[in-house]
Image 1 (cartoon, one colour):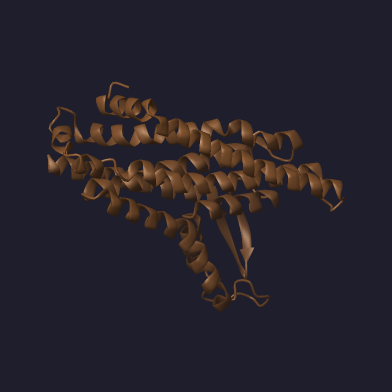
Image 2 (image 1 turned 90 degrees about the horizontal axis):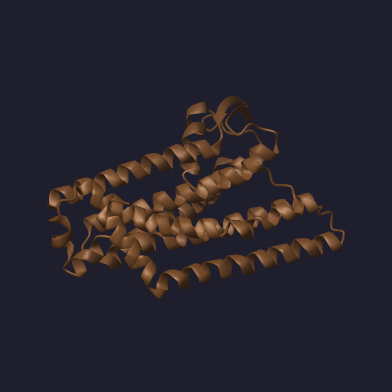
Length: 290
């Protein structure tokens, strides 16, 4: 809190009506979606469709988590894509970089102020996600990993916006590139996997081709897929529900028995590394412009 940029950004962000309007809309969307999922699970239980309270609780939590992850992925770039390009458009960028603050303090002040508000959105959603505990079926480990994925996705996508904003003069261009990057990670990778999987025989009953079932290819494909937060969360849940460890395990894929690290750990490494690289590059850019 000794960072003047951080204090100024937080005060400016929280004094207006926009912050409370976004928070209210976020909770309304999430709450409405929670009511829909809860109502559907309740009807399924009352109709005797084979849905127990435990499985219904897992469905409610999974649905809310995925919906909140989608909202966070959509909102975060909008809060950081204009961090420095907006200063250039308002002609206050020269005043900002001429202060005695270091480039690292300026970048982190901008980034943390935006992320603090996004973290507030995640924390505000805790009571809504707590609906799943009323029905059971959700372990504390699943909740902890879910919130960790939400927070790390927020940090990384926020870093993407700060990175483009530090290099570009137009907020519009910075926002577009930030959303393109986010869409490629969240939507583009699943589409690419679904398009190529029939040709590779991934979903077929026949054994995987020899070159695909080799360990290097399996690890490479796994790392690429784990860069998608939705895949990382879903794969972690699938392995955990199948009795696998939350950290590492062995799995037979095709004719190859491989040692695997839990997808959420691979996701964490990739996103932490990406956040550090992007903020470092943004810091170098601001430092050079001084």
